[in-house]
Length: 134
Image (tube, rainbow, N blue to C red):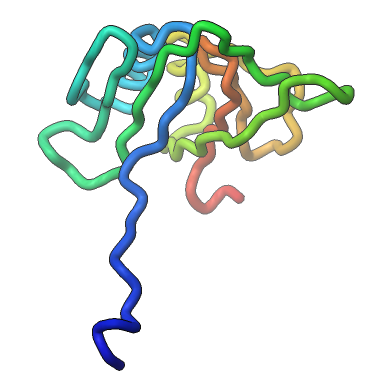
């Protein structure tokens, strides 16, 4: 295979979430995930695993016109969820309690017994799950 036909390398490095307040949301996820703030500007924050450990970084951008998604979507015209984060925890009950203590809200609709759907302070849904429980 010639070098001209080898596709360029690509890897996911960061997921970016919009929010009314990038700093509030970044600091929520930093506490929840034990991540460190890597860069911070007035409208943007980057967090990631501490001490250069491997893992996907998260960035947050302030969007003054941000509209939180409705989950689950009930009617046409609601702002739909575009994506959600899956967060692995060791203990679902303890992980849920910790997320709520950090500022998350338990979603009213819980479609699975072995997963907890929560809403972060900006209204983005995210799921907590335990490996081997699904």
